Length: 260
Image (cartoon, rainbow, N blue to C red; front, side, top):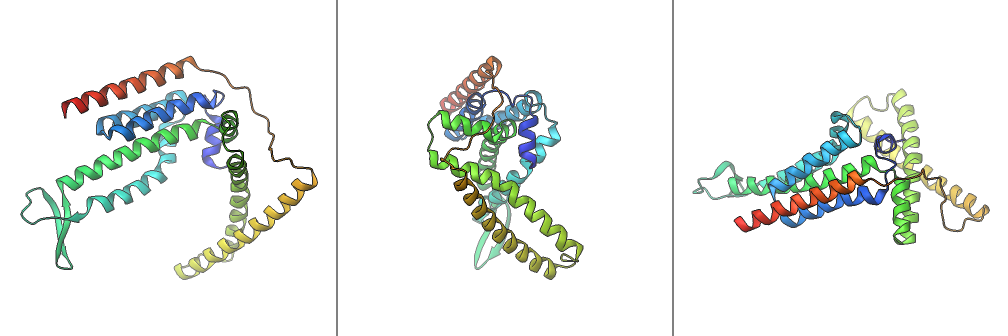
């Protein structure tokens, strides 16, 4: 079981209906996308982090560790945004260098734009992290079925979810075998071993898919995956929090627009 899936099943609110947690995560996300406000983004990040810690029962370091990978990608994306062509006469230039006859660097405008973009993206990521860390995949897929989401897409999501574990286990076994034979002793050998690992995993995954398909057909597979779902409960607290947080964000967003 991968880390994020283990967290979802161990969460204190894993037995709450997925639609309640979905509303709690998606409404602030949409509001942040609409208003593009640093204050709203910071408030959303704080609310989702505290919700995962106090409602979900996770340690703060566990939550931050799960957010580390997407935040790293966000930082690299922001770096590409804050660098641009600047004017030497601009007093707001913080850093600059000459390249191909032009002057490039960072000024206060680009820095502010990059900060706004990062906070906005981080707020959206924190909403998705809250939902994924507190909602088992099976519960979410059941919610999609109840809402009559595309049956084909749900089946694809179910198969992809199941084969994540299969491919991960195969990759782990191959990596251990390669590492025991000094397959990663230097950079050149590591690149070669990594290529062989990817190739082997792809072939093994393809063979496993063929076997699973044959076994499903032999058992009269009708197109629906049935699995046991624990009884899910409602939550008045989360409904109140959803309404309160969304109302607060909308109110602050309106006030900020009026000031502008």
